[in-house]
Structures are given as structure tokens and as C-alpha cells.
Length: 496
Ligand SMILES: [Co+2]
Figure 1 (tube, rainbow, N blue to C red):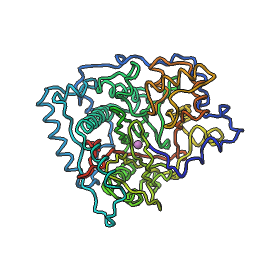
Figure 2: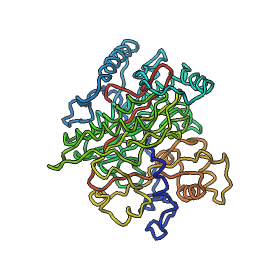
Figure 3: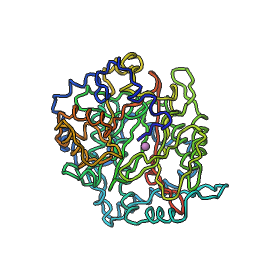
Figure 4: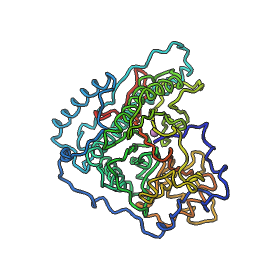
């Protein structure tokens, strides 16, 4: 999940929003036209609706579509190493159980790994840092190390990463033009829940394990933070689309945050290659005591070394300036540190014991994003959103997340706000969620309550983030642990 770069926050914030905005709802919590959805039941069908157990994995390999998110030839040597590792891993799995994952994925990973031990991520050494002055006290480092070296913590984190790999593999094999974004998003969500063996419906179950944040399927110039909302007109994937797939898997609040980009047209190969290279360059340059601005500079240099030709016109691949990678804490997708994709004067360093999501976004547009819900431009200039006219869909709100400092209980004049708040506390805590996740719990008529919670500052709304119309953007992201002996890129797979 992308993080808005902190210094840019507020520019599109609620405080700046002109009162003349066509959005009568000052909280920005409801997209135009959302009232049409309000009275629909909106509750998702049960998981059996698309269940086709027995379909062998790999069945869809005969698809004619070119999936350009598979590896290009430009990646650095560590890829070869991780490929070998993954091959070994799969053989071991088959030997152990004779079971393989189904399509759609429905076999809990616990059954595929009866030993209860999950594959490790890719290991990389820390880069050598010239200035060796540690910024962290020995005591703090010891504490952090104990935590990140804890065996059951690591094994749970690796299990979440294995769920991510298996679900994204299915996505890469089956997400094709003609499928709707709802089908793809629900397929990912249901896959994650099945593989974790937790449907997340009972009170509290969602805090044990589940989706780390709303499954993102952002198309083209929508850079990040789009998820299909219930009641919205369906958007079908098209062969000219560039789709960012960004989803999270958590166990006990520790989130594997990893994303990739799919396209079906080789035109965009260089765009995808640029961003994949930038993300891997960022990871390679990251480590204990490394200044984050140095990681950013390396990301920027890698990304800007690419260009992409679309319809005879050449575009530089621009790093998106106001998004960034981020550290991860328990039940907290953005832990407070940011990894921008352009160099900064920030002196912040990475520290042992931290967990980072290294993600980068590259764009053929301006390389900066605007807020797709509360920005007045969203309403005044539909040209910013060509798919609104061609596909007639407002992006809508991506998600909601409880403020970290919000109290456990609130007193609210609205009964619906109080009960909504209780539902959020019991099922999501401070994890970001979307309307689909809320509605499958049976919650309805919650928008007034939600807007109240937003107005009180206890819940934050996450808008879709857009570059200019006609531009294309890509994203790749991995989660890595800054361990004593090196970095463990826990979400690495043989796909990216
Ligand atoms: Co992220």
C-alpha cells in the first residue's frame, strides 16, 4: 500500500477544501453518486460463488494474453539466486504433502506445509555504510533484534508471505481483459482468507489474520488506492490497461505489503521494467544505518534511466514525487518513516529491527498525484478521469482507517456511529479497510456514521490517487526485515 509523502500531506487535505466544492459531503467520505449504492444490500456473496475446486493450478497457462508482468531480462543477479531457492522450495512442498494449490486458491497453506515451517524470504547482505556511527543505542538494538529474531514471529511472517505468493500467482494466471475489477479483487480477498483458513467473519477474527488493507487494483493514471466499492458500476479490465495489484496479508497484525503490475500489451514493458528495477535497487541499497535519502537517490537514478514509447511518442519514466515506501509496525501499515522515490535532504536512517515496504511508482504523466475524491479538480475537470466518461465510474473512496491515537470508546450522538466504531474496533483495529470488507460483516447504512467518525478525527479516509489523464503508471513493492545478519525480503517470489 502506498504512503503519501508526509511533506505533501495537507495540500489536498480537508482543511484546504473549498466549501464551494460540488462535494456536499465535507468529509469527502462519499463519492458523487454513492447514494445510488446506499440502499442496495451490497453484501458480498459467499465464497462458494466462484469456487471451482479441483481446477488444477497452471490450467490457465494456455491463455493467449501476454502477461508482461513476468520478469524482464534487466534484473540484477540476485534474482537468479532467488529463483533457484524457490525451485527447491516447491519441490520440497510437493514431496512433503503431495498437495498443490487449487485455482482459485482454496487450500490453506497450513495443509501444504504440514511441518508448520514456511519458506524463508530472500536474504541480502546489508550494504557497507561508511559512517559507522550507530544512531540507535545498544539497548534499543538488542530489543529490536530479539523481536525480529523470534522464531514464531518470523515463521508467522513467512506464512503470510507464502499466502501472498500463492494468491498473487493465481491473480497473474487468471486476471485477464474482460474480467471485472470486483471479480479480481474478491478473488484475491477470498484466496487470502481461504489460505489463512480464517474467513474473518466472527468478531475479532479479522485481527487474528486476514487482509492487511483494501486490495488495490489501480488502472492506468490512477496511481494507487483504488478498490471496487459495492454498488458501483462494474469496471472490466481492458487489454490496454496497466493494472497495479497491491494487497496485504497479515497475521497478528504483521502485514506483508507487496505489489506488482500487470499489462497485456508490450508497449508498457519498459514502464514495468523501470519500476521493478527501481524497487529492487531500493531494496539493494537499504540496510542498517543507511540514510533513507541515499536509498531514494538510488531509486530515482534507476527509474529515470528508462523511457517508454507509446503511440510513437517517447515519455521519460518519472518517479511519483508525493508517494513513498514506508516502515511497517504491528497493525500499522505506515509506521512513520518514509522512503521517497526522489532524493531528499532528510537525514533519517534505517535501523536494525525495522520492517520496511520498499515500493516505487513510476509514471508517464506528471509524476505527482492528486487526491481523486476531495480534490476540486475531480469534480470540475472530468478530463482528468477519462475512464469516467468511457466507463462512467467514479473512483470512490479507497478505504478508511482508525486513527492510531483514537480512544477505545467514543461518545457520539449518532447510535450508528457508536456501533460502527465498535465494529471497527472489533474487526479492523487500526488496519485500513474498505466498504466491501465492512459490508461482508453485515454492516449496512453506515455512511452517516462513518462521516461522523471522520469529522471527529477518529477515522481517516483514504482517497484514490491520480496522475493526469492519459498517463500510465506502474508499481512494484516488497516487504523486507532489517535483521542483524542482513535483509530478509520476505515477500520475494520467482515472479518478482
Ligand atoms: Co505499501
